[in-house]
Image (cartoon, rainbow, N blue to C red; front, side, top):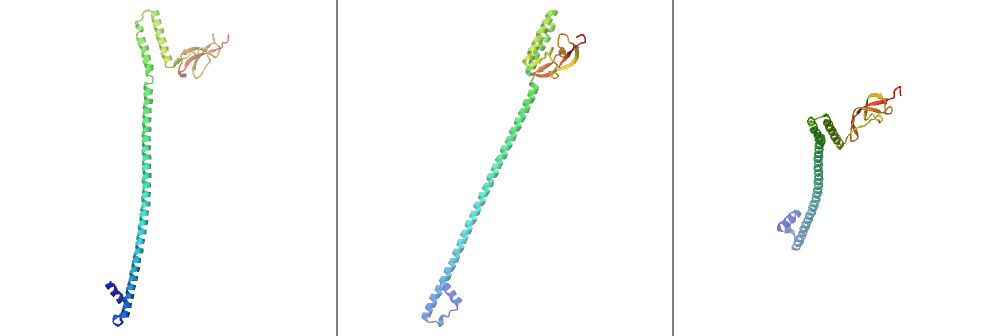
Length: 220
């Protein structure tokens, strides 16, 4: 307080030697009042600075919160994108596995699809190997008829059907004309003779029948 008083007297150039006691008292009171006012003003300035610092801190914290929220949203979006990419990769892997299994199934079907048919045909081959054991024409004929019947049973079992086109109309999807023959006992332009049997598998022609078409002769 004394130091502040002396600084004030120097600032205002006061000579206490020339003043009366009452004037000195008034001067001292005035100086202390002035000093108090300056101190109060200084305290007010410091108070304003504190408010400004507090406002700046609040603004900075809010900005950091906004930035942190945006970063959290970016992290969330990146997480979602990563999950989508992982699901996409898993879907691709599953699709590739299904494709490979399907391809393997198709290949096996091509290779082993006739396995049952081959197993049945082998039985016919066994029967043919025993033909030589038959003595006499009649016994051999009967045995061959048995083999033929067994073979037709196997064909029927697997959907293989022999065509019987004699007397029917010509069908280019099932028949192939190899000759013409006089119409004897059949209508002209119909199939009169079969040179080679045709076969159908489940209704689809796998071998055309070689046929002769009946034609009307001059005598007829």
